[in-house]
Amino acid sequence: MSEEANSPGQQKDNAQKAPLIVSVASGKGGVGKTRISLGLACDFARSFKTLIVDLDFFNRGMTGLLPKGRHVRWIDGPAFMAEEGVPEQWQLVQAQEDATEAENIYFLRYPDLTETQTMAFVSNSIATLEESLSNMFGTLAKEFGIEVIVLDCHGGPDNTSFAANGLADFSILVTDTDKASLHGTFNFVRQLEYVEGKPPQRTHIVFNRIPEDSNFRVLETMHDRYFRPRLGNQSKLLAAFPADRQVARASDKASLFPLLIPNSLWARKIRTLIFDLLAGTEFEDYAERLNLRNIPIVSEFRRQAMYNVPWFLQPERVLKLASMFAVLMMFMILGIQFAQQIWPDQSRETLAILDETLVFSTIWGVPLGLTSWLISSLWISGTINTKAKITSASRRGKYLVVTYNMIKIFMIWIVPAIGLGVFILFLDELSQNGMDEFAFLYGVTFSGVLALSYVGYLLKGLYEILRTHLERFPARERVLTLVAVSIYMLYAVIGIGIITSID
Image (cartoon, rainbow, N blue to C red; front, side):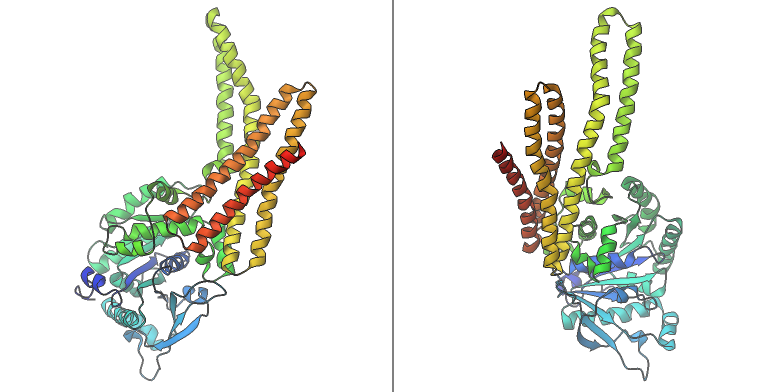
């Protein structure tokens, strides 16, 4: 492709003739490149006519993932694949699936390659492949108003992937932290540098399928030390995606699965990835049209997060902290008792009081605090997961599933609300029988459980409402979030009403 044809000025002046092109490649297959490509396309399609192109002509993972859709028109394929006597059978398809909104998503279907077409990938130069693909994409943009093209490349270094990298405005290289994948990624970068004759300038890194116990800072250090110098010191670590069961479940339910999980951590990372990719470039206005906003604290949490819920709701992390706290308290108690034997008499009284406080907090504070947290975590996590199911089902038109999960949220929260009223009456009865200390201790504990639960999820709900407005989500998402949080708050009112009526 000539420099004139790829100049930023021309891309800005005529978006239809020069759409934004993003290529997604990998050093080897099996790292989740295709799912990320589909996630990018679905997010761009919120505001742009977006074309997905499966450039893995032999394996066709993206083609198998996409739905049937509506036929738009037969088109000419790339010139390097033209074969005399073989009619062009490339098909432009508009994606359609159940009640999922996908009017802006298009993709290409093409027949199996002949032997001559297979040899064309070897006999033609990278420059020829690049020019041929560029001409086809230019025609599609002009005739159908395609504004964004996402290229899902072959898993590994090949001429088509290098051609896609050459014509793309941005290239994303996906890898995981497996040794074989990292070796393949470094090999891809070396080959790309050899093809282009200089360090690649527009290629960025995405880590995918990272174990949930991984540390983002370690991945960032790996990127800055090993990848950035080989990529012209301009590479960005766009995202680190943890292995996510919600993504796997959603992809089993629908081809356009990213549309079913718009509030998942995975989908939010995709949006942050797009913002970071476009920020400070001539395509920055694309982020404006997508209503993407850089909220520093929120964006940084998304970049580093490896879980869908905050760390203080993750059992394994909190249990580790609680164990460390208990061990620390034990050593402090032993230290104080030892100090009482050797310090002057005037210090012993103060140390004895401190010793009793530490013993009480270790014996009672840790188990009671953990009990409160475990129950609170169960309620909050259960509500978050159920709300995600409501969003997914509403987008697929499964309103019976929506109703069932609304009732499920009701059952999750109405039980502790009623339980609070019953327990308050029980404590009142205990206090009247002279068991004030027992009533106070367990009253505070149980009230703490409910306070953590209600306040924790209330803050989570208010954050969800604020985020959907700040990031200008579609009205449907804003209303759904508002309704879910409002119903939750209603449960607290119902609980108070029950308490009052019983009393």
